[in-house]
Amino acid sequence: MKRMISLVLTALMSLVTVIVVAAPTAHATAGPVKVVSLGDSFAAASTLATTYQTDALCDRSSLGYPYLLKKFSQSPSVDVACGGAVTRDLFAGRTIGATTLPPQLAALTSSTKVVTLTVGGNDVGFSQLAQCLATAMTIGDPTAQALAVNACLQPLSDSTALGAKVYAMSQGLAASILAIHTQAPEAQIFVSDYPVILGLNADGTCPTIPQLPAGVIALVDGANAQLNTTIGAVVIATAGAGVPVTLVDVAPSFTGHGVCSTSPLINGFLHPSAQGQQVYADAFNAAIKQAFAA
Image (cartoon, rainbow, N blue to C red; front, side, top):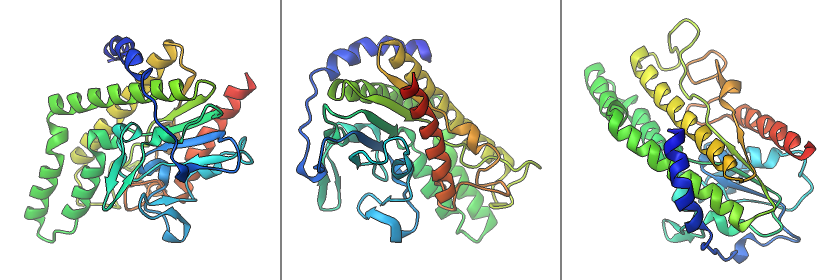
């Protein structure tokens, strides 16, 4: 996988150098934007209390890790992470209802010093999987529920189809990182992976969702781990191409704290809880501190 990702980088680099995205007035701040946060619902802290929403359309919350970055807490910042986002939403306007959002890359400026990014899970289909499983769990008849769960898992069961989605995601993520560097050449870029969302409890069970067999959980967790491995490979490859990008590996901090654990940092909507967002922030803060201390 690392070798394949490296092979596409040269072509991607030639493409992203011609990308020019005008900054929309909606992202204007009082001064030069120093910190820009991009990504999907895990960066937007979607599903958390609506009291803390900063943008209902994107289900973006002030409880998210972009609001907990310490080193640059006094710097002008912009958070354009959006629930449901995929890698292409960094490059192209996304329509939600009657509103068309600007490309997330439009938030970058030449003065940007830090860019945080969490994206890729939706490219692989994890948002659809979460919604499908949530619906399946409401079915009362055990036989019908099992059939529904199996239907949800079908995309993960086909290893060839899953591999194709993961590889397509890797190309989108690599192009995103290269485009960020092109538009904000002075910025340090920090890209995170994802928690392993379900994670069997220490005793091999899932008391939170007892209807899910261990084999089902292992299948989902395996796809989750494959996604994380690929994100790490993309970051290594782009860093090797000279891009100032760092992997923020959050997965170890969530080990033993998935939905199936007795001390979850993932909520019932299969997203980080407020405490989980703080774990994300701690990982980003440590990576940022190390990068700027060098």
